[in-house]
Length: 190
Image (cartoon, rainbow, N blue to C red; front, side):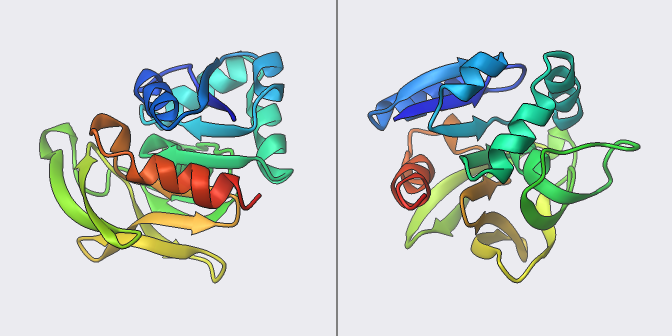
């Protein structure tokens, strides 16, 4: 499978390495032509307002929105969760998202950079180490959203149809459970 990782800002290289470790071809996405050539998309952690600004600058904002709405399998980690959320609390003024995920997400819910932490969480029947860096959490989710993991009483991993989002960074650990779930459960079901 050709897995695109939006490579405008953030930790895209780590997601490419995870995709390749799972046996897929990782593609850096910076153009609409590259976007049109992929089977699945990963939106990396980074700074959500910067990523949206750069997506608009590179004329990728609407093409990504369109591909998501047309059923492309998408996984977003941390800022990627914010980018997929339909609604944002504590966002920048008039902050846009690609949308598609019926959640309200709170930016920087776990605190500032200095409040970053690691924690063991349950995900898909297993325990994994989750890295939270200025992480969001899900404040509210629609009926069609499945909560896969929680931390501090809030959803931190969710799925809705062809979309997976985590508020943590599995690409910063050696554990490929979240990426494998995306490829095996979401990409193959689409």
